[in-house]
Length: 252
Image (cartoon, rainbow, N blue to C red):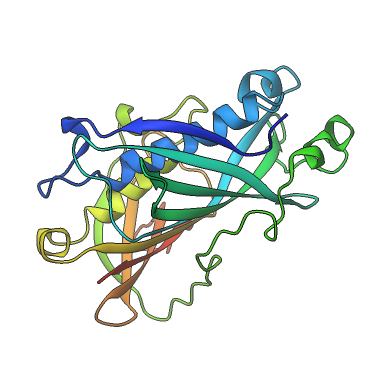
């Protein structure tokens, strides 16, 4: 079986913003769908895992783009597993035009958790370590973007608190990972998208949140083009809340 798979995508008119470029959340969904289909075809899909009360959880996602796909364009997403550790696996993506040139690339980190305990499972022993058969090393297929960075929040400023609703929740019962991306990008003025280009987006998921939780968004400017964001739940007058995710957004 091939270790690298390709999946086509088409940019529908209702998938683009006011500039005619694909929303990052839509691209994120394409990436996660590609990951799911790649896993499923190798016996590691959600359906098979749920039978033994396991599921995948996205831990980190970094997307770096030379250009965002535009309305009516077609392309493909290639995906492969770069490495497997005891508790995490690294999966990469290439986002390609029809002629094979890159729009950009993405890196992700996933954990396999026990659905009852919500604790990570040992990927090296689960199903006799079968996942190791699908690893494609960095030397075999290079992903040229930088790895996931670190976040150092000193005095982030609270800029928005929002409730969560039905449309925020996924099949696992918690807030959809892509919804955080959409809510984070909504923090930025329209001029950032109209006059600049979103070059890189990183997000690290720290904890789950659920329907009815209020999400508080804190920002910290790194420089004129880069902003770090921290999302917390349960913030009150007497509590700083729990960190749900952290993100880095860079426009150029």
